[in-house]
Image 1 (tube, one colour):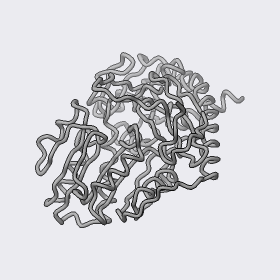
Image 2: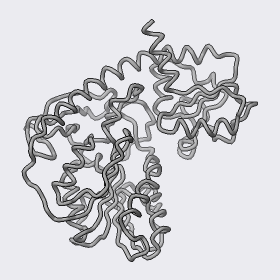
Image 3: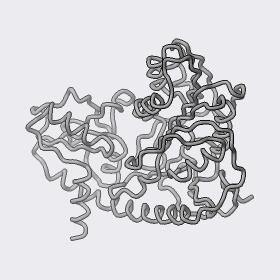
Image 4: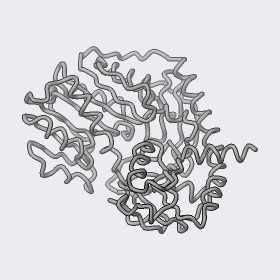
Length: 391
């Protein structure tokens, strides 16, 4: 049976890409009617939990620490549109380790929170929070009363669901009239980044939204968007929408969005192929730094590909630093992880910053801890490697 678009129900899905390293055989399609990018087949969810994989391929996932990075943005957006001192009822969809729940309860002293989290490894992070009901279930398997909540907060959850559009409809159903939806999801705009090297289409993500497709879906289920995503943020989409009840069951075609999506998919594949090939040059540059002591900050997906695709020897490092992964993993590629406290002028002559999103923040920290160390940024390292291959 042919698959249909989750949004417009069209069966005109065009194959666009097979993700590298997919353990689930996922393929990526672009709907030729509305332009929504989506992966298939839809994953049958079970209680089985896959091991953590911090790889640069499609199998990346299950460390589950990234949502905490988005807490401040969501709370700030919410504060711009509601009185946090009022008695509020909030549904936190995919509460994960409870980062947003704790911050919200601190900011809203009269609020009641329902934390919805199916992963038994992390659900109990919200179990002892005050004014909180913990529901250990997937959002698709719940049936909250209509109009129960003032706010629904969903952070990097909708892209995981088997039926994203149905989930948005249910978010509208459980909200009171005039209630707020605060929704955060990955942004396909990152596919256009010149330095992208990691596989963006991971196994755990079934929907891949642009600002256009996600905003259209939100509006179609009965919301009016009152705060648009930041166009300068190519990594995340964050919308605040208010329930109006005016739904739209007929989804018009969007040829411009279809063309944009197809063009972006093609560009991504070409750019990523070129950057993967350049990693060997990048690894050679770092290896040539010997006998200077080289520390590397950022042990995630970029580091994984530097080792696997570039052939970099991680045992040559004097330190491998990662503030967030250190909390969850002891080592990466058989090299022990360290916290930033280990960094000093005595421990590193050179610090390689293997991060795109947090490069400025890490660079400032390196300058405080090891002011005499040379700093090499991932973007610069990759840029030189690409020029070297072209020469």
